Amino acid sequence: MEKRIFTAVIISIAVLWLWAAVAPKLFPDLVKPRTNLNAPQKSAPTTTKPAAVSDTASAPPAARPVPTQPAAVVAPTSPIAATAITYTRIETDDYIARFSNRGAELVSFQLKHYKTKDGSLVELVKSRDPSRTDFPFGIEARDASLTARLDSALYAVDNQTRDGAGVLEYRYAASDGVAATKTFRFSKEYLFHFAIAITPPEPYRVIVGPGIRTLDPDEKDSQFTVTGNGVVQRDDDLKIIRREKADRLTAFDSVQFVGMEDNYFLSVLRPEKAAGAILRAADFGDGKEKRRELYAGLNAGPDGVVTGAAFFGPKQTNILDRYGLEKTLQFGWFDIIARFFLIALLWINRYTHNYGWAIIVLTILIKIVLYPLQHKWMMSMKKIQKVQPKMEAIKARYRKHKSDPEQRQKMNAEMMKLYQQEGINPAGGCLPMLIQFPIFVGFYNLLSRAIELRGAPFLLWIHDLSARDPTYVLPILMTAAMFVQQIITPTTADPAQRRMFLIMPLVFGWIFKEFPSGLVLYWLVQNILTIVQQMIMNRYWKDHPAELQTA
Image (cartoon, rainbow, N blue to C red):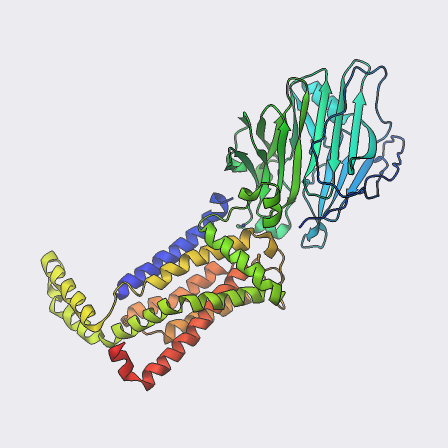
């Protein structure tokens, strides 16, 4: 019996270790913005230094985004272009976006409610060389010279309000007949609409990328960070494409949306008028710094027009539900358990106002629910300890016949008969551990993917429950608690096996030291509650030995 339990525990440790190693690779967790677009724009002449900046600031009336239609692109009678690079700032209650008229591209998208470790706003446009011309909403044409031309051209910009929404329109035209218009429509939503038209019609696509946001240094070092994977949904079926394994070019006839994701954020394009979509891989850097990143794009139709909506934002449950992006929040194995825990934590946090205390309260509730099973497990272990002499006597009778299958079968039959006489369930000791595993995995996935817990502090040195404990104090406390639990738990193991059991807390402590501190907090509280329960049961059995006879 003890060997089976010991084997089950060792297997559990191996699974945890394997999960920590491969999970990040296999399972890549009421918005009311205000758009400011109407202030007049300033410009500056082009110089060899960085060009002047132009910001807009005012608030149009509230309106839900509606599809944007591109301005008619006709053969120009005269060239249309700006004389200097300018930037337009779009600010809502939730984000700050900056567009450049060079290529009419999105050069910055900062989320006002989410910050990095250094206190700056989370930036969803991956930072690279500022001279680059492949920022989001850049053009990739079949003709490379047309790509370079349209992505480096200085577009004339016009800000206005239409139907209660802020509209940002960029226009470019050359004397040889090449013309382009990019129109963006914003309102009080994360989702904003775009329309792009090029004449004469040429095969091209509009792209976003590469990848999604620049990670904090500690995120780069974390094995739990998953970033830059491609996401594409077709016929309500979501597919995640790992950036490291992505093909140079993957084409899709039709999609509901296409883009990139990481643990907590999402950048996608949702087509309204397009001729298919793509995910394209590109390698940056070299040597150890070499990294593969993805671009997502929508192909223009034969008329040179592509329209759609873009979402740059957090993977927050209620926000994703609103825009039909809910499937991008995936908690991997035991998804249902993780989502249930998220709902429970959000509800409990309304009263605790601290997710650390919410985890403790939820752990107590889980312990209460599992109490009947754990109580039976403790009773089973105590009974096995009590009948240990009888079990050893049976084993002694058959010790000389270890290699005889028939004798081994007789010994097992006698052991089962003893279990029945004493009211012992030989599988009862494994059941609580098996139930704990999906709960553990659900908590792990929740803490590594639920943006509500990203950066959530607890007490003192715990500033982020989704990150590891930088001081390792919680893992040390958890290891100590596991030692105490091992010592006071009834066991029938021989001295050698018991010493092996006492090694397990060290193994768990080593594994857990890199886990999110919220997960370690859950396991620590779980162990403390088990210790209290075991101490109460030990004291009760000592004062009421007869109860064990009839239990």
